[in-house]
Length: 109
Image (cartoon, rainbow, N blue to C red; front, side, top):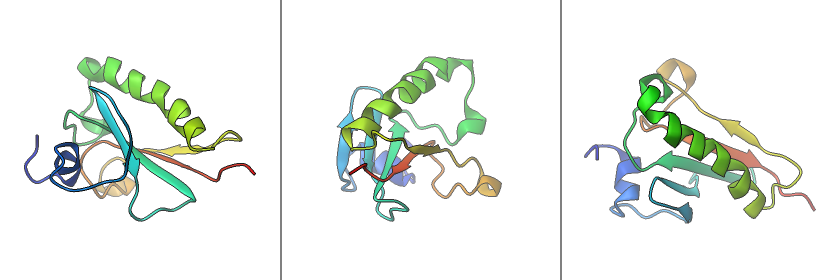
């Protein structure tokens, strides 16, 4: 755990979040500043600053996360499609330096 990381604090329940999915490796919760009707953040429980810091040892975890994204999207009504976004580094718009995948969309009527 990174003691200063807000997402690590969410994982360890030091800060509340609207959790929608959790397993041994990852946690998904609602973004507090949504940019779409559905805006979720999927994060690994292991602290990883950004995609830039990922290496071969993270391949299984990253693959598991990417396979989980469509399932979570469907469970939130995004059956017609959704966007994913990973901001990487300050130049890429990353604000919280704990790898996270944004899942965004509007539920189909």
